[in-house]
Length: 441
Image (tube, rainbow, N blue to C red; front, top):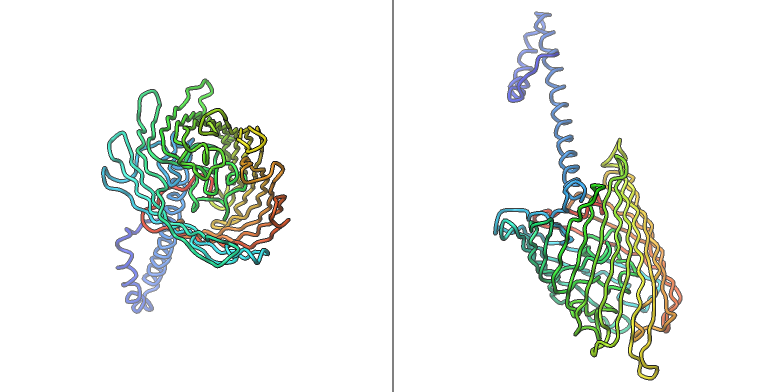
């Protein structure tokens, strides 16, 4: 074993080496000693650089594992707001994060001005704190940009919106947790994500059609339970009783159903697949009345699957993500002349994403959806899309994304197809909440 030089002596040794070398020409032994010391210093410097890099890699890996349901038992309180673990930071000292999501698009539909411009998709302020030993508080406010008339004069409106505001009791007896306030509802996988956490530039068409353009977020209560099972797998069940007015843009919970409560349920299984993969399966259910007199009903069923694989040799450089969701609804609608109409619709999305370098991801997504709201669509209206995208994470706080999207439509009054080039730029300022464990490294 070679003799070690204490790290604090390295600058001193480096400073003395030139002076020692001056007088070494007359003493071969001294020359040899100086050369040996120089080599040891170089080796120590290389070792220090390797150690720094290894520490950074291990910290990134630890952050990734902490965000995994299997490793944490409960997903930690994260930017998606679905976590169950204790809040980060000190008691009553909130972590504050600003998320900014910018976009731009160039569309073959030149008349649609909303699809041919740069825009501020969303700017979001996220406050999180442990407000008691057994409870966390979350407040998320956002400002978004909308084009009032995409086919007329460009009039941009920007409004503040309360995205989420809830308290999460995460350490109740019997492996229970309760969340009360306004929150993103536990229906499927994509609906839990804020805009800046989406794996693609746009939200899937089926999610927009069945849950609303920005997904479903309502006011109410959510009870979750870690289900004991003989297989020792992570099984979680969520039951939510909410106001329908929180989903005012949802075809099922919004509109005439806004005065009625809604019930949602989600069952999730998370399991490791060998030493390199993980699998998450889920089923969802939503039920509500769709008329003010509560004579009409509507329900939505969903199924979701997420598979993540990491290269065991290069876990931070190679990964594969597969995800898909299926939606099916049956709803009653009051028609002016035909009376009550019962209609069923379905939709789905599926995507695959491959990580080909430490900071680079590429993927493909396919969408198909029908529309559950007959008040705005014909019975046989449908839309499908195919997308290809690439994402570049400059670091954990800055991401660039480029996406090509082709849309095909069978909708009255709209073109048959559209091609668009989409650009996304997202960054954060402040503390660094955990990303959903499958979105990036």
